[in-house]
Length: 316
Image 1: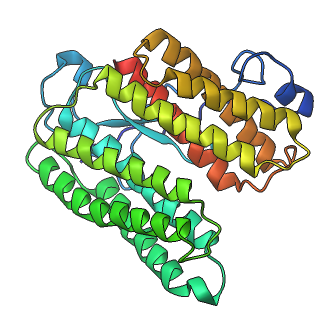
Image 2: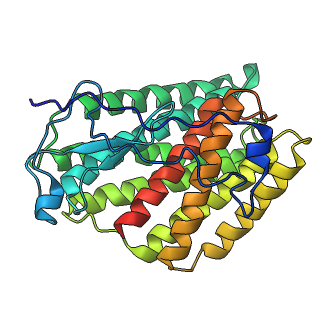
């Protein structure tokens, strides 16, 4: 198996100051999208992924082995297909690496937000899902995925994700009806279920040999996710962070208006702005310069999803 060279670290995010976070127009609250440049390094997750000719050299042709890139690495990288074509093998591996890690983190957050003896059974279920998706991520990371076996990987992953999405819906309903008293909002359960369901639909599409993105679906899905993130951030910031709270709510309104609008130019502008904001905010939260109850892992989680949004937009 051929292993690509050691990845270069992306450009570092500049030091965060309150002035830098709070001064600028629009929803970004920072200047010039600082620290939001993509890494140009092509890398392989630990354990190795089989290399293949670049998809860009023969757009639309299924490669013999999947090839992915890591971009925008802070705490963790964002996995994307290498090249500009729509190779279902590369998309399968990149999305599996990205989303199984995201699914694992959802479970990690549920565990954190389900304290006490009364929630021990639900917390144990979340722990099992956490282990399941950590294991699936490791399988994908270390396997040689190519045209002969990528459909098998996709089907295995779908079978793991479907019961997780159903569990999220059940927990959301229980939370809404007062049957459980966790610290997980009903909307957060539903938000994470929406991501799981879209992940399975895309894997099924890849297994059928198609990886193309539908513009209306892509923008509508990610606008909803970014709207939710902005609402969540507004509610998790310290009440003293009035300017940031107001900006987060404004961001939510902008993404709500973006739903149903298939303008790639408008979506890309909003997407790049939210990536820039989340990148700098993640640094501010890590350094204790922004008051909140947002765990740094959650801050980086929503940042990586925004980066994935922009990457998909650029492929439309």
